[in-house]
Amino acid sequence: MISRLTLEQVVDLWDVIKYAIDVSLPPTASRERFRINKILDSILCGKMDCWAVYERDEENKVISGHAVILTVITVDECSGARALLVYALARLSERAPEELWYEGLSALRKYAVANSCQSLIAQTNVEFVRDKLVEVGGEEYSLMIVPIT
Image (cartoon, rainbow, N blue to C red; front, side, top):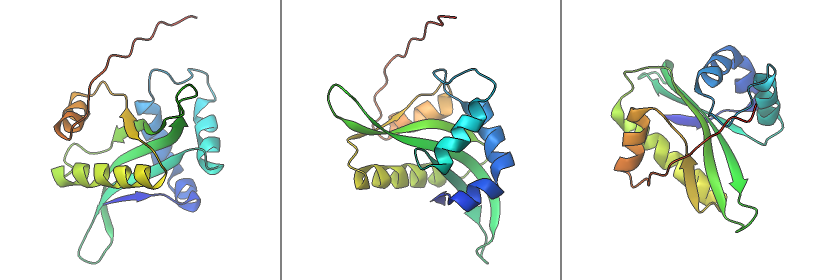
């Protein structure tokens, strides 16, 4: 199951979310000391969404957390194209059932469509994630980053 977390859930689960963010930030993220606080601010003010991928048991209790995902709706200033950017994705478990990945991608697609996005964009250097995105029609492009400082 995948759920977009409420602000209260983000605050309650912040220690887990903070760890997940720290290990999965994209190479374009700031390297400054307070970057995690800025990300929390972005979530709390509604600029960014935080999602959890997890399993529930027969009694509907959460039994296992598998991933934390941060998304942002972006607008290309030149073309006006809207996209749902997967800003960060952290696997918390290596043993997530494969159907959870497809369920999660389906939910993100629905959210993107509901927000008038034309595409879903993700950056990754994790082969497993890349393979899953290619399986569902993802196109690969190269991202080159040249540090200035």
